Length: 469
Image (cartoon, rainbow, N blue to C red; front, side):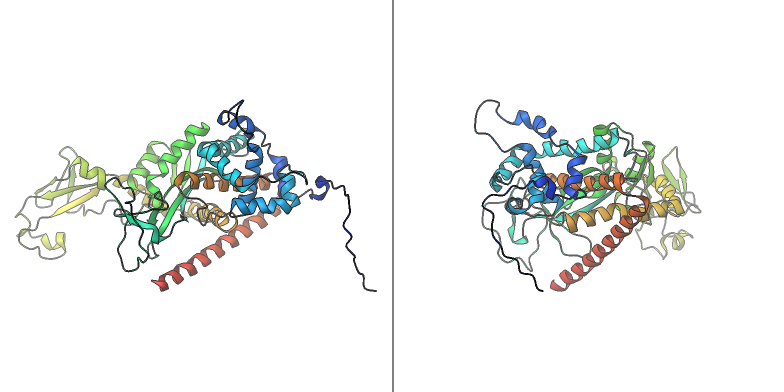
């Protein structure tokens, strides 16, 4: 017999939300893992003690923000709407059925009041807790960066003034066929964003998020936002300094891609006694000089060719600081009738041509790195970096909204990076504490598949965008 349900709303009902939330629900596990009441005390100096209207509870604000990043709810307005009818969200925010959900405008004002430093302190507090509990050591780290689409269109580009600020005036409505660069134009809606993109893909207004990850646990130790055109190799050493200073630890090992492999960085890591799994920026770096013809004299800082002629230093300290190259040149007229000129030049030199050789200031460490790149240990570390660090970026973009900036301005995008990393760290901590070894293997395999799908979708998007040009 077919059943038939008749709905008769109760005039009065007694509901205990606690009993409706499953014991293994993610929000219940997060609530048990971390006490967020410290946020009230931490933010107390930001509020007037005895005057003005009462604000929303800072802990309530943070719990609402955490929900928006954990479940990739893209706006303050939407997260307020979903908390209104989702019992699990209400329970996590400590709101009863009768309590009014704060207005979305209150979230915006509170975020502005707290500022980026408050979110940084909350993010770092979780890292310190992990260090105190011995869950992570932080001595072996991995680094990488990823682009994040800015909340600004190319049509917002306007010419720069003498100070690099946007000129007053209306932005172009149609920009195809025109030339734009970060040197000449800036976005009027988000001046902190910059034109950036990988080789072969269209340039868009972007930010760049630089993450530093603990190698063993995949806990994110540091997340740093720059303009999209910032070079990763110029950021890496500063992030090591920040980690060592903030958490009072000594970094012993670094794994990163060749974007960090400038000679000056490799030299610095060597001086710091940091074990480096970082390949050279280019495979052809190092000493490319034919030593059968040119012999270096350390005392004179010059090369002597096989015919006994000297090649003297011609670059200045300023030039070498910019290019990391030292150039040596022979006197004019000596190469034209030299019996070895074809070997030196690869062809008969033209009149007035002079032989020169260049050597990278850091060629010794580059040669050492070349040898290390061929070892199994080095190749294994580079393969591990791909799924550990880039896999975290794939997770952040596909499940936590890091594929695009929620806000405008670098400080607010930095808040987004802190919150995204905080959510990911909470998930890693739950895995470390509650997963069995077999569950962990399944989780690792799942993240590998997720990362593979992300690469495939990214490749398809790049091909599609290229066809539109």
